[in-house]
Length: 112
View 1 (cartoon, rainbow, N blue to C red):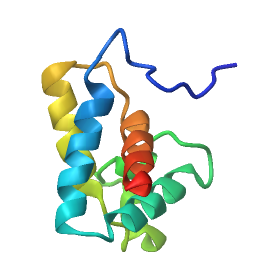
View 2: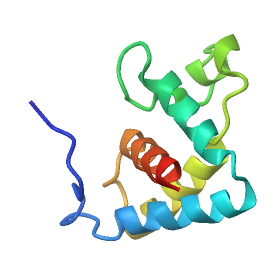
View 3: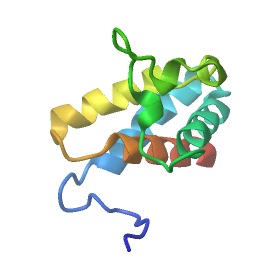
């Protein structure tokens, strides 16, 4: 079984955790409530079937995504996660999963 591991991306994307933390810190300086928003976002993602980042998926025509379900309409932090994802895709395309980005960002926000 896989285990949670600090510095998991040390070899494949060495800057991942530093980049995540830098974006989270930037947002935290603008909005001190962002840790609570990310914690709630992460909780809603993990609640039913595990932490797989399904709450980040956008709806399409004919398919209402989890993000747009009534209990999730007040979730916050999507833009922060999108910013981190774009940054990591620029540095290490296709390496860091969205689920890990959400987990790392939430961890860093709570530590602030």
